[in-house]
Image (cartoon, rainbow, N blue to C red; front, side, top):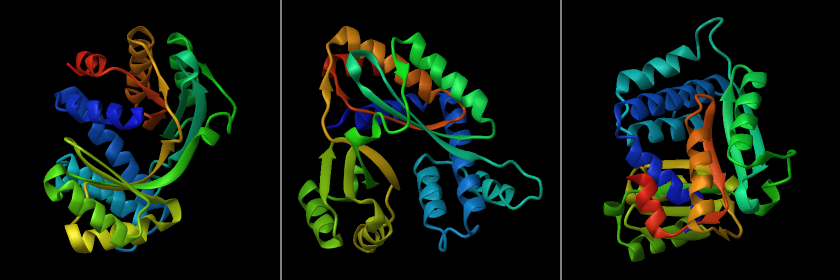
Length: 248
């Protein structure tokens, strides 16, 4: 499994802490508001908003919070967020992509650059890392939604390209421009997914020893902790022992 997927699962477990959950809800609310403002404030007519709402529900975000975030997008003079992507390198040349929603590009760029530098990395130019990843749709289901065989069959029927299944659940991958159609087909068979979104999937991964792996995980954790950062992707692999130790 790609490193970014494992790291995201670690974040879900750490998100059980009150402080992390509060920050997670803030990020989810920001995505909902931005999605509603960029399109229609109706999840049924706005695929990105629907995906944002699904992700919020999967994290047990209260319905009132979701509705408030949508309403906020329609307020005159309300907050306006800009999508920004940063690309850079961590230790051992690991490629890192950071997606952010910000109301202040200068602040966010300074925070991201500082985090890279502090952990032995460096921020690169746009395009310096993205070519090592594929832009794909990713639809996630919990493990109880289906067996791995059932999920594979459903994914094939829906027109997906690949499936990854493990103890944390199932991730169905498809072409980016097919995300809406594949997600809709899967939902008719398996019900509403845990999330459905465009992601950066690494073409290859770099295996790190525990020392370099710990440094990289700390950098990714620090990036994720930023209020402006929505998603972080990286092309690496580390030992199971380190995963367990860092997620404890």
